[in-house]
Amino acid sequence: MRPLDLDERQWTDVPRNFEAAGWTNYEAQQFQAARAAYLAWFQDEPFSAEPAILAGYLSHLLDPTPSRAIDLTRMALAASPAEDLLLNNMAFYLAEAGQLDLAQQYLARTQPLPPDTELGLTLSATRGLIAFRRGNEKLGRALYEQAIAAARTRSLWEYETLATLYYSRELARIQDPSAPERLMRARLIAEKIAEPGLVLTAQRATADVLAFSEA
Image (cartoon, rainbow, N blue to C red; front, side, top):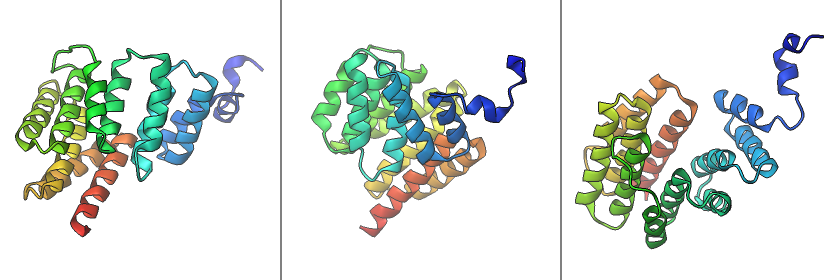
């Protein structure tokens, strides 16, 4: 058999094909299976940041607390201590866990980036989250709106929608009356874009907002 004659099943049955299995399950929205594959990939390549980023991202969305996402990101940072995306993600997960001072310390280790770049606007949104959780509503609003505007200007629709989902959640936390409509619009856009992780984020943000209303 020539190499290019392999069918799809044979490609996915390649031993240690954790990365491919992860992406296949991710695209199929089989998120638990995707996370398991990303974890296996990270165990196989412990010095690679990408599988830890992906496994941490799904853990944050699937688990009731961000503790597993924090642990995975901490392990990845041991190998890649200057990786800005890992530092941002650690700050985000720690803020979610209420560890705001430590979150700020990780965020302070990131490189200065223009606010209209993909990572730059992501950092602005994370700063907005920390500001909201510290009770600084004015700064939190300004930072989230800066991130959303930067994404919109560059037609980064997934980034704009992601920031809007989290902004809506923080507004719901402080009982802002605009939150439900903002969240509904962002969720509809997420479903239209149909990127699996964005859809899962919309579902998690909606569940969080419902939990606020029932508390």
